[in-house]
Image (cartoon, rainbow, N blue to C red):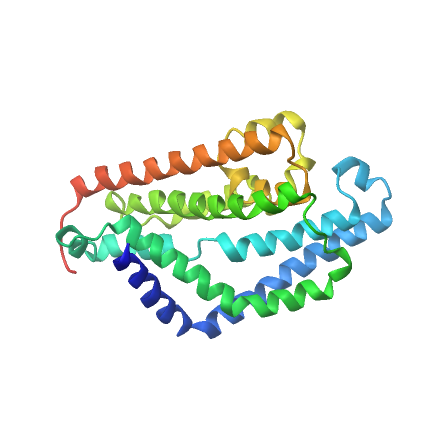
Length: 268
């Protein structure tokens, strides 16, 4: 554990060296977020029945997108999959085959160091942005939601990472994996609730999506906070999210095991 904590420390220092990049990325991410907030404010202003159709009041809908930004800051995988694929292509993983360092835990430590650095840099601009929409900010729906939300947030981060790690392992077989990563990102963007709350979908389609890991990558922790998932549905959802984390971890491990058999060491 000590060596991985050291990796977190080194990764944090390296990431903070590029804090201006983090800051500009955060500021530019506010542009589509502001556009989406303006769109929904206009929709609710012109259509009083929008809340009945979506199940969200105007304030809840605005706050939903603010929560999307918050969850992304804590859990999003930025360039980890590209870096892992580059390590495989360039032979950098050879050193991990000779040292007592588990590559998955090494990358996970770097992932968390990146999230910590991003929070430190992006936290203040995000707080200022949310403050501008403070009239829409809501507390957790219940004390139960307030306790479960952080746990769900951690599970979301792990799920995001393990899936990205497993997909990056395709670099053992393919020279270029960008197409697969973009396809996964596009589908995840739609099916996780980034573009719109999954409550807007037909019930049967929403139920089908909840059999996949995608809603647990964003929508579920937000629904916990807002009280959309409560009672038995809360614990059932948390159990499914935990199972998907375990499944994604097994997937990541298997992809590494199968890929390393195909690996021809060079460089590094």
